[in-house]
Length: 329
Ligand code: DGY
Image (cartoon, rainbow, N blue to C red):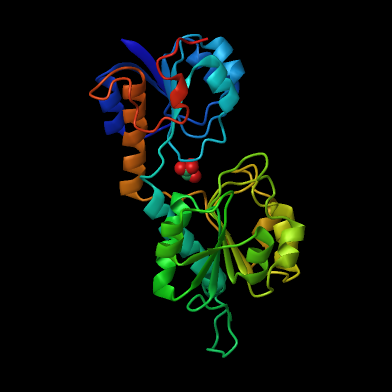
Protein backbone atom coordinates (compact mmCIF):
# COMPACT_ATOMS: atom_id res chain seq x y z
CA UNK A 1 0.00 0.00 0.00
CA UNK A 2 1.23 3.51 -0.80
CA UNK A 3 1.78 5.82 2.14
CA UNK A 4 0.28 9.26 2.54
CA UNK A 5 0.37 12.06 5.09
CA UNK A 6 -2.76 14.08 5.87
CA UNK A 7 -1.11 17.15 7.35
CA UNK A 8 -4.17 18.63 9.09
CA UNK A 9 -7.27 17.61 10.99
CA UNK A 10 -10.09 17.04 8.45
CA UNK A 11 -13.45 15.24 8.46
CA UNK A 12 -12.91 11.70 9.87
CA UNK A 13 -15.09 10.09 7.17
CA UNK A 14 -12.73 11.49 4.51
CA UNK A 15 -9.84 9.85 6.36
CA UNK A 16 -11.81 6.58 6.24
CA UNK A 17 -12.16 6.96 2.44
CA UNK A 18 -8.42 7.51 2.11
CA UNK A 19 -7.72 4.43 4.23
CA UNK A 20 -9.44 2.28 1.60
CA UNK A 21 -6.51 3.06 -0.70
CA UNK A 22 -3.56 4.11 1.44
CA UNK A 23 -1.60 3.62 4.60
CA UNK A 24 -2.59 6.95 6.19
CA UNK A 25 -0.58 8.98 8.70
CA UNK A 26 -2.88 11.69 10.05
CA UNK A 27 -1.70 14.75 11.94
CA UNK A 28 -4.57 15.68 14.22
CA UNK A 29 -2.50 18.18 16.18
CA UNK A 30 -1.09 21.64 15.52
CA UNK A 31 0.11 22.84 12.13
CA UNK A 32 3.38 21.04 11.37
CA UNK A 33 6.56 23.08 11.16
CA UNK A 34 8.37 22.82 7.82
CA UNK A 35 11.05 20.65 9.47
CA UNK A 36 8.47 18.29 10.94
CA UNK A 37 6.49 18.16 7.69
CA UNK A 38 9.70 17.36 5.78
CA UNK A 39 10.59 14.63 8.26
CA UNK A 40 7.15 13.04 8.05
CA UNK A 41 7.09 13.14 4.24
CA UNK A 42 10.41 11.29 3.90
CA UNK A 43 8.70 7.92 3.28
CA UNK A 44 5.40 9.15 1.78
CA UNK A 45 4.01 8.84 -1.76
CA UNK A 46 1.44 11.57 -1.34
CA UNK A 47 0.26 14.35 0.94
CA UNK A 48 -2.94 16.24 1.67
CA UNK A 49 -2.10 19.76 2.83
CA UNK A 50 -3.90 23.02 3.53
CA UNK A 51 -1.47 25.88 3.13
CA UNK A 52 1.84 24.32 4.24
CA UNK A 53 4.82 25.69 2.28
CA UNK A 54 6.33 23.03 0.01
CA UNK A 55 9.20 23.21 -2.46
CA UNK A 56 12.57 21.74 -3.38
CA UNK A 57 13.84 21.21 0.20
CA UNK A 58 10.87 18.93 0.93
CA UNK A 59 11.27 17.08 -2.38
CA UNK A 60 14.97 16.48 -1.74
CA UNK A 61 14.06 14.74 1.53
CA UNK A 62 11.01 12.89 0.13
CA UNK A 63 12.12 10.96 -2.97
CA UNK A 64 8.88 8.97 -3.25
CA UNK A 65 6.53 11.95 -3.01
CA UNK A 66 4.56 12.20 -6.28
CA UNK A 67 1.31 14.03 -5.47
CA UNK A 68 0.50 16.91 -3.11
CA UNK A 69 -3.19 17.72 -2.85
CA UNK A 70 -3.95 21.15 -1.35
CA UNK A 71 -7.35 21.58 0.29
CA UNK A 72 -7.75 25.15 -1.00
CA UNK A 73 -8.21 26.99 -4.25
CA UNK A 74 -5.17 29.16 -3.54
CA UNK A 75 -1.79 27.43 -3.76
CA UNK A 76 0.64 30.28 -3.16
CA UNK A 77 2.16 28.04 -0.46
CA UNK A 78 3.69 25.92 -3.22
CA UNK A 79 6.73 26.73 -5.32
CA UNK A 80 5.38 25.60 -8.67
CA UNK A 81 8.76 25.75 -10.44
CA UNK A 82 10.02 23.24 -7.86
CA UNK A 83 6.96 21.02 -8.35
CA UNK A 84 7.52 21.03 -12.11
CA UNK A 85 11.27 20.38 -11.77
CA UNK A 86 10.64 17.41 -9.45
CA UNK A 87 7.67 16.09 -11.50
CA UNK A 88 5.44 16.24 -8.43
CA UNK A 89 1.76 16.64 -9.27
CA UNK A 90 -0.02 19.40 -7.39
CA UNK A 91 -3.81 19.71 -7.17
CA UNK A 92 -6.29 22.21 -5.70
CA UNK A 93 -9.98 22.36 -4.80
CA UNK A 94 -11.07 25.08 -7.22
CA UNK A 95 -14.75 25.54 -8.09
CA UNK A 96 -16.52 23.78 -5.22
CA UNK A 97 -16.05 26.85 -3.02
CA UNK A 98 -17.00 29.59 -5.51
CA UNK A 99 -20.53 30.28 -4.28
CA UNK A 100 -19.84 30.08 -0.52
CA UNK A 101 -16.83 32.35 -0.91
CA UNK A 102 -18.79 34.84 -3.02
CA UNK A 103 -21.60 34.84 -0.41
CA UNK A 104 -19.03 35.59 2.26
CA UNK A 105 -17.51 38.42 0.23
CA UNK A 106 -20.93 40.03 0.23
CA UNK A 107 -21.39 39.43 3.95
CA UNK A 108 -18.08 41.12 4.72
CA UNK A 109 -18.65 43.98 2.27
CA UNK A 110 -22.12 44.64 3.68
CA UNK A 111 -20.91 44.41 7.26
CA UNK A 112 -18.16 46.94 6.53
CA UNK A 113 -20.40 49.31 4.55
CA UNK A 114 -23.17 49.24 7.15
CA UNK A 115 -20.85 49.18 10.19
CA UNK A 116 -22.49 46.06 11.61
CA UNK A 117 -19.54 44.87 13.71
CA UNK A 118 -18.87 48.34 15.09
CA UNK A 119 -22.49 48.76 16.11
CA UNK A 120 -22.58 45.32 17.71
CA UNK A 121 -19.42 45.91 19.76
CA UNK A 122 -20.85 49.23 20.96
CA UNK A 123 -24.18 47.63 21.88
CA UNK A 124 -22.50 44.74 23.73
CA UNK A 125 -20.39 47.26 25.64
CA UNK A 126 -23.66 48.70 27.06
CA UNK A 127 -23.22 52.05 25.33
CA UNK A 128 -26.64 52.23 23.65
CA UNK A 129 -28.77 54.85 25.41
CA UNK A 130 -31.05 56.18 22.66
CA UNK A 131 -31.82 56.04 18.95
CA UNK A 132 -29.93 58.81 17.16
CA UNK A 133 -30.22 60.03 13.59
CA UNK A 134 -26.47 59.93 13.10
CA UNK A 135 -25.61 56.60 14.74
CA UNK A 136 -23.26 54.47 12.65
CA UNK A 137 -23.99 56.12 9.33
CA UNK A 138 -22.64 53.88 6.60
CA UNK A 139 -22.61 53.78 2.83
CA UNK A 140 -25.28 52.26 0.59
CA UNK A 141 -24.76 49.19 -1.52
CA UNK A 142 -28.00 49.40 -3.52
CA UNK A 143 -27.40 51.41 -6.67
CA UNK A 144 -23.67 51.88 -5.97
CA UNK A 145 -20.61 50.82 -7.97
CA UNK A 146 -18.92 47.49 -7.22
CA UNK A 147 -15.24 47.24 -8.18
CA UNK A 148 -13.96 43.67 -8.42
CA UNK A 149 -10.20 43.14 -8.68
CA UNK A 150 -9.64 39.58 -9.92
CA UNK A 151 -12.42 38.34 -12.20
CA UNK A 152 -11.87 34.59 -11.94
CA UNK A 153 -14.63 32.18 -11.00
CA UNK A 154 -15.11 33.58 -7.49
CA UNK A 155 -14.98 37.16 -8.76
CA UNK A 156 -17.64 36.30 -11.34
CA UNK A 157 -19.86 34.64 -8.70
CA UNK A 158 -19.49 37.76 -6.57
CA UNK A 159 -20.32 40.09 -9.48
CA UNK A 160 -23.33 37.98 -10.49
CA UNK A 161 -24.94 38.79 -7.13
CA UNK A 162 -24.70 42.54 -7.81
CA UNK A 163 -27.75 42.48 -10.09
CA UNK A 164 -30.11 42.19 -7.13
CA UNK A 165 -28.53 45.31 -5.65
CA UNK A 166 -28.85 47.24 -8.90
CA UNK A 167 -25.11 47.88 -8.80
CA UNK A 168 -22.88 48.94 -11.62
CA UNK A 169 -20.02 46.42 -11.92
CA UNK A 170 -16.53 47.45 -12.96
CA UNK A 171 -13.60 45.07 -12.81
CA UNK A 172 -9.88 44.77 -13.26
CA UNK A 173 -8.10 41.53 -14.07
CA UNK A 174 -4.81 40.41 -15.65
CA UNK A 175 -6.80 39.97 -18.85
CA UNK A 176 -10.32 40.77 -19.96
CA UNK A 177 -12.87 38.00 -19.51
CA UNK A 178 -14.84 36.69 -22.50
CA UNK A 179 -17.38 39.13 -23.98
CA UNK A 180 -20.29 36.81 -23.13
CA UNK A 181 -19.25 36.80 -19.45
CA UNK A 182 -18.93 40.59 -19.45
CA UNK A 183 -22.39 40.78 -21.01
CA UNK A 184 -23.92 38.34 -18.52
CA UNK A 185 -22.44 40.22 -15.56
CA UNK A 186 -22.98 43.62 -17.14
CA UNK A 187 -19.38 44.27 -16.13
CA UNK A 188 -17.07 46.93 -17.54
CA UNK A 189 -13.32 46.27 -17.80
CA UNK A 190 -11.30 49.21 -16.45
CA UNK A 191 -7.75 49.97 -15.37
CA UNK A 192 -6.90 49.43 -11.71
CA UNK A 193 -6.57 53.20 -11.18
CA UNK A 194 -9.93 53.86 -12.80
CA UNK A 195 -11.55 51.19 -10.68
CA UNK A 196 -10.13 52.62 -7.46
CA UNK A 197 -11.33 56.13 -8.35
CA UNK A 198 -14.84 55.05 -9.36
CA UNK A 199 -15.81 52.14 -7.09
CA UNK A 200 -17.89 52.59 -3.96
CA UNK A 201 -16.99 49.09 -2.82
CA UNK A 202 -13.75 47.40 -3.84
CA UNK A 203 -13.46 43.62 -3.41
CA UNK A 204 -10.21 41.68 -3.87
CA UNK A 205 -10.54 38.21 -5.34
CA UNK A 206 -7.18 37.76 -7.05
CA UNK A 207 -4.58 35.06 -6.36
CA UNK A 208 -1.49 35.99 -4.37
CA UNK A 209 1.68 36.13 -6.45
CA UNK A 210 4.89 38.10 -5.97
CA UNK A 211 3.63 40.62 -8.54
CA UNK A 212 0.40 41.05 -6.55
CA UNK A 213 2.22 41.70 -3.27
CA UNK A 214 0.76 44.92 -1.79
CA UNK A 215 -1.54 45.46 -4.77
CA UNK A 216 -3.37 47.71 -2.31
CA UNK A 217 -1.05 50.11 -0.50
CA UNK A 218 -0.87 53.80 0.40
CA UNK A 219 -0.87 54.97 -3.24
CA UNK A 220 -3.99 52.93 -4.00
CA UNK A 221 -5.90 54.06 -0.88
CA UNK A 222 -5.15 57.64 -1.90
CA UNK A 223 -7.10 57.07 -5.12
CA UNK A 224 -10.21 55.69 -3.41
CA UNK A 225 -13.28 57.70 -2.39
CA UNK A 226 -13.47 58.65 1.31
CA UNK A 227 -16.85 56.86 1.41
CA UNK A 228 -15.51 53.66 -0.19
CA UNK A 229 -14.97 50.26 1.42
CA UNK A 230 -12.33 47.61 0.78
CA UNK A 231 -12.97 43.87 1.22
CA UNK A 232 -10.26 41.21 0.99
CA UNK A 233 -11.34 37.58 0.64
CA UNK A 234 -8.30 36.62 -1.43
CA UNK A 235 -4.97 36.32 0.41
CA UNK A 236 -2.97 38.20 3.00
CA UNK A 237 -0.10 40.15 1.46
CA UNK A 238 -2.27 41.51 -1.37
CA UNK A 239 -3.09 44.37 1.02
CA UNK A 240 -0.42 46.33 2.87
CA UNK A 241 -2.09 45.96 6.27
CA UNK A 242 -0.05 48.77 7.89
CA UNK A 243 -1.04 51.18 5.09
CA UNK A 244 -4.66 50.08 5.47
CA UNK A 245 -4.60 50.93 9.17
CA UNK A 246 -3.40 54.43 8.27
CA UNK A 247 -6.04 54.83 5.54
CA UNK A 248 -8.79 53.81 7.95
CA UNK A 249 -7.53 55.92 10.85
CA UNK A 250 -7.23 59.00 8.68
CA UNK A 251 -10.65 58.30 7.08
CA UNK A 252 -9.01 58.19 3.65
CA UNK A 253 -11.45 55.33 3.07
CA UNK A 254 -14.61 54.61 5.09
CA UNK A 255 -14.28 50.97 6.14
CA UNK A 256 -12.77 47.59 5.38
CA UNK A 257 -13.56 43.91 5.74
CA UNK A 258 -10.65 41.48 5.94
CA UNK A 259 -10.83 37.69 6.04
CA UNK A 260 -7.12 37.22 5.26
CA UNK A 261 -4.00 38.88 6.64
CA UNK A 262 -0.30 39.31 6.14
CA UNK A 263 1.43 36.65 8.27
CA UNK A 264 -1.86 35.14 9.52
CA UNK A 265 -2.78 33.85 12.01
CA UNK A 266 -0.50 36.49 13.57
CA UNK A 267 -2.11 39.83 12.82
CA UNK A 268 -0.73 43.34 12.65
CA UNK A 269 -1.97 44.31 16.12
CA UNK A 270 -2.88 47.82 14.97
CA UNK A 271 -5.77 46.31 13.01
CA UNK A 272 -7.43 45.40 16.31
CA UNK A 273 -7.70 48.98 17.49
CA UNK A 274 -9.25 50.37 14.31
CA UNK A 275 -13.04 50.57 14.73
CA UNK A 276 -14.08 50.81 11.08
CA UNK A 277 -12.91 47.35 10.08
CA UNK A 278 -14.55 43.92 10.21
CA UNK A 279 -12.10 41.08 10.89
CA UNK A 280 -12.77 37.38 10.33
CA UNK A 281 -10.46 34.39 10.62
CA UNK A 282 -10.02 33.14 7.02
CA UNK A 283 -13.50 31.59 6.90
CA UNK A 284 -14.80 32.65 3.47
CA UNK A 285 -15.27 29.05 2.33
CA UNK A 286 -16.33 27.80 5.76
CA UNK A 287 -19.76 26.29 5.37
CA UNK A 288 -20.30 22.66 6.36
CA UNK A 289 -21.25 21.66 2.80
CA UNK A 290 -18.38 23.50 1.11
CA UNK A 291 -15.65 22.39 3.49
CA UNK A 292 -16.90 18.81 3.05
CA UNK A 293 -16.83 19.23 -0.73
CA UNK A 294 -13.28 20.64 -0.52
CA UNK A 295 -12.07 17.76 1.68
CA UNK A 296 -13.63 15.15 -0.59
CA UNK A 297 -12.23 16.79 -3.72
CA UNK A 298 -8.78 16.94 -2.10
CA UNK A 299 -9.12 13.20 -1.35
CA UNK A 300 -10.30 12.48 -4.93
CA UNK A 301 -7.27 14.35 -6.28
CA UNK A 302 -4.90 12.34 -4.11
CA UNK A 303 -6.53 8.98 -4.84
CA UNK A 304 -6.56 9.53 -8.61
CA UNK A 305 -3.18 11.25 -8.66
CA UNK A 306 -1.56 8.24 -7.02
CA UNK A 307 -3.16 5.92 -9.57
CA UNK A 308 -5.99 4.53 -7.45
CA UNK A 309 -9.79 4.51 -7.67
CA UNK A 310 -12.12 4.97 -10.64
CA UNK A 311 -10.23 8.01 -12.02
CA UNK A 312 -6.76 6.49 -11.62
CA UNK A 313 -4.16 8.76 -13.25
CA UNK A 314 -6.72 11.54 -13.91
CA UNK A 315 -6.98 13.74 -10.80
CA UNK A 316 -9.95 16.14 -11.19
CA UNK A 317 -8.07 19.39 -10.42
CA UNK A 318 -4.40 19.21 -11.44
CA UNK A 319 -2.50 22.51 -11.39
CA UNK A 320 0.48 21.17 -13.35
CA UNK A 321 -1.08 18.44 -15.57
CA UNK A 322 2.07 18.34 -17.71
CA UNK A 323 3.95 16.30 -15.09
CA UNK A 324 1.28 13.60 -14.68
CA UNK A 325 2.79 10.21 -15.52
CA UNK A 326 6.39 11.47 -15.50
CA UNK A 327 8.98 9.78 -13.28
CA UNK A 328 9.94 11.65 -10.10
CA UNK A 329 13.17 13.56 -10.46
C1 DGY B 1 -8.76 28.71 -0.37
O1 DGY B 1 -9.40 27.77 -0.78
O2 DGY B 1 -7.75 29.15 -0.96
C2 DGY B 1 -9.21 29.33 0.90
O3 DGY B 1 -8.64 30.55 1.11
C3 DGY B 1 -8.88 28.39 2.04
O4 DGY B 1 -7.50 28.38 2.18
